[in-house]
Length: 155
Figure (cartoon, rainbow, N blue to C red):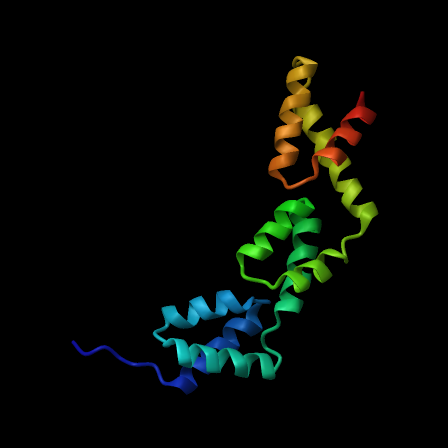
């Protein structure tokens, strides 16, 4: 059976739909184009077109990513920054997106997560509770100094 080649026009059309559905980063679009059979040159051309026509913006993606992870997932700065870097977002774009984090919302997230964890572990040895909370908050990407500050206020 002969393999069907997708035309560059069809690849571009698919990529536009893919980007219109939700914000994407350049690396995700490049991966998707390759999975559809585009070679590197075709993918580069389509990505340039998507950026030119404003279907694709790493800056916009990073801002949406940060907002979503703070508000929905309650991730910390370290985890968000690491995830953006792994997606190949340039450091200056990451830094600008991270600046939009509302400090009050960020601290509120820490307080909510810590109090939930404390309530889950009622009746457990206080030292174990503190250790579990510290591990949990570090896994969520929060800075250890901030975690310690909030834990000290809980006691």
